[in-house]
Image 1 (cartoon, rainbow, N blue to C red):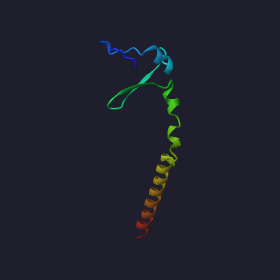
Image 2 (cartoon, rainbow, N blue to C red):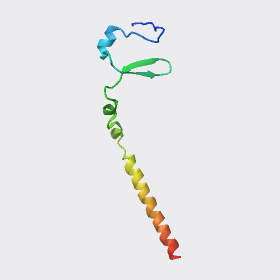
Image 3 (cartoon, one colour):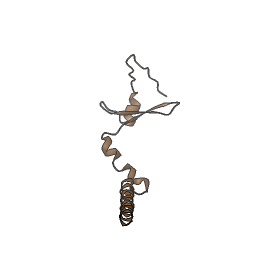
Length: 89
């Protein structure tokens, strides 16, 4: 287990063996994940938009957008029927 010291500026040097193992190079973005009892530093994606693209598609459920569109269509039809009922009265 390697250790490091936090500088007065909050900097920590990642030991060389971990930089090489995880591909940390100058300019690499990192993410900090707080698990409550410990902190994890992981390499961030080079392009976060590309990395996130389509990630929700794999949930297996229907598209939320399609559900909302369908709900609005049904609501509009109910309102139109109600207007027709009132006009016939």
